[in-house]
Length: 94
Image 1: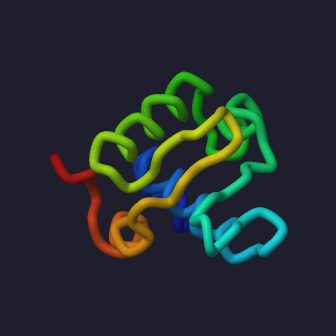
Image 2: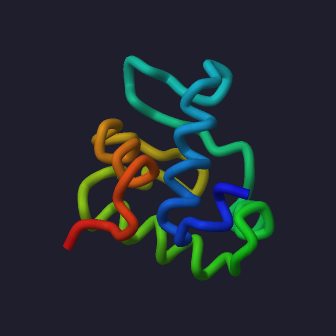
Protein backbone atom coordinates (compact mmCIF):
# COMPACT_ATOMS: atom_id res chain seq x y z
CA UNK A 1 0.00 0.00 0.00
CA UNK A 2 2.83 2.40 0.86
CA UNK A 3 4.52 1.85 -2.50
CA UNK A 4 1.32 2.98 -4.24
CA UNK A 5 1.91 6.48 -2.89
CA UNK A 6 5.45 6.73 -4.26
CA UNK A 7 6.77 7.66 -7.67
CA UNK A 8 8.89 5.17 -9.62
CA UNK A 9 12.20 6.52 -8.32
CA UNK A 10 10.97 6.17 -4.74
CA UNK A 11 9.69 2.66 -5.44
CA UNK A 12 13.06 1.70 -6.90
CA UNK A 13 14.89 3.25 -3.93
CA UNK A 14 12.68 1.28 -1.56
CA UNK A 15 13.36 -1.94 -3.48
CA UNK A 16 17.12 -1.35 -3.38
CA UNK A 17 17.03 -0.63 0.36
CA UNK A 18 15.13 -3.86 0.96
CA UNK A 19 17.75 -5.95 -0.83
CA UNK A 20 20.64 -4.13 0.83
CA UNK A 21 19.46 -5.83 4.03
CA UNK A 22 20.30 -9.27 2.58
CA UNK A 23 23.93 -10.35 2.68
CA UNK A 24 23.33 -12.72 -0.22
CA UNK A 25 22.77 -9.68 -2.45
CA UNK A 26 24.76 -6.85 -0.86
CA UNK A 27 28.53 -6.63 -0.40
CA UNK A 28 28.84 -3.94 2.27
CA UNK A 29 32.60 -3.55 1.88
CA UNK A 30 32.35 -2.84 -1.86
CA UNK A 31 28.93 -1.19 -1.52
CA UNK A 32 27.71 -3.38 -4.37
CA UNK A 33 24.24 -4.82 -4.74
CA UNK A 34 23.57 -7.76 -7.03
CA UNK A 35 20.01 -7.52 -8.28
CA UNK A 36 18.10 -10.81 -8.20
CA UNK A 37 15.76 -9.65 -10.98
CA UNK A 38 16.09 -8.52 -14.57
CA UNK A 39 14.95 -5.03 -15.52
CA UNK A 40 11.81 -6.63 -17.00
CA UNK A 41 11.02 -8.54 -13.80
CA UNK A 42 11.75 -5.46 -11.73
CA UNK A 43 9.32 -3.47 -13.86
CA UNK A 44 6.64 -6.08 -13.22
CA UNK A 45 7.38 -6.03 -9.50
CA UNK A 46 7.22 -2.22 -9.31
CA UNK A 47 4.17 -2.05 -11.56
CA UNK A 48 5.85 -0.15 -14.37
CA UNK A 49 7.51 -0.67 -17.75
CA UNK A 50 11.14 -1.82 -18.00
CA UNK A 51 11.97 1.45 -19.76
CA UNK A 52 10.63 3.38 -16.78
CA UNK A 53 12.87 1.33 -14.48
CA UNK A 54 15.84 2.23 -16.69
CA UNK A 55 14.92 5.93 -16.50
CA UNK A 56 14.55 5.70 -12.71
CA UNK A 57 18.04 4.17 -12.47
CA UNK A 58 19.27 7.00 -14.68
CA UNK A 59 17.82 9.58 -12.30
CA UNK A 60 19.48 7.88 -9.32
CA UNK A 61 22.77 7.89 -11.23
CA UNK A 62 22.41 11.53 -12.21
CA UNK A 63 22.25 12.58 -8.55
CA UNK A 64 25.14 10.19 -7.68
CA UNK A 65 23.09 7.91 -5.44
CA UNK A 66 23.93 4.75 -7.39
CA UNK A 67 26.16 3.66 -10.27
CA UNK A 68 25.24 0.82 -12.58
CA UNK A 69 28.27 -1.41 -13.05
CA UNK A 70 26.30 -3.89 -15.15
CA UNK A 71 22.64 -4.68 -15.70
CA UNK A 72 22.48 -6.56 -12.40
CA UNK A 73 25.34 -5.07 -10.38
CA UNK A 74 24.77 -1.71 -8.70
CA UNK A 75 27.18 0.35 -6.63
CA UNK A 76 25.41 2.18 -3.82
CA UNK A 77 27.23 5.52 -3.71
CA UNK A 78 25.07 7.36 -1.18
CA UNK A 79 23.03 5.13 1.12
CA UNK A 80 21.73 8.04 3.18
CA UNK A 81 20.42 9.84 0.08
CA UNK A 82 18.72 6.60 -0.99
CA UNK A 83 16.99 6.42 2.39
CA UNK A 84 15.99 10.09 2.19
CA UNK A 85 14.32 9.50 -1.15
CA UNK A 86 12.04 6.94 0.44
CA UNK A 87 11.55 8.59 3.82
CA UNK A 88 10.72 12.12 2.94
CA UNK A 89 11.39 13.42 -0.48
CA UNK A 90 8.68 13.08 -3.04
CA UNK A 91 10.96 13.94 -5.94
CA UNK A 92 14.59 13.35 -6.78
CA UNK A 93 16.95 16.34 -6.30
CA UNK A 94 17.81 18.39 -9.40
